Length: 157
Image (cartoon, rainbow, N blue to C red):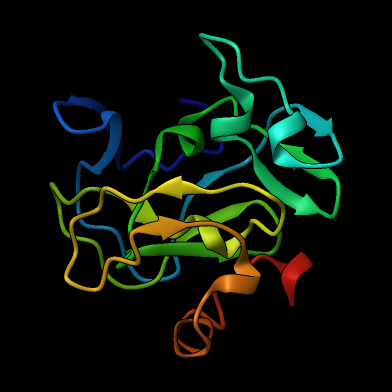
């Protein structure tokens, strides 16, 4: 945990995803969850970022400009994707609650809220509205862009 991580969070190992972040107490809507506060990387595409174990930068850093990504030194890098997230992005680097999050609930956000390069992944969220393949913001359906409108990285607006 870093100073910028919400004190109401806990990191746990899960059988499905490995490490994941959970609410240790109830968290209110628009409360800051975590901040991308780590090193900045420049590359033409996400696939050009280093992805060696154990840091796996390409798998954890978020895009905040056309050719720039930032990692986290705290819990932000362990927050998993969901096609039905309870968190979103404010500004460029803040993960905030999109609704009240109950104690014990996993903290999630939609990775398409920041990415717009060649990056993609197979989704494992298991939600009824799962999009199966997660990739760039430009591929996000318009109705979901509208739903997320206040929780999209500033660089994509």
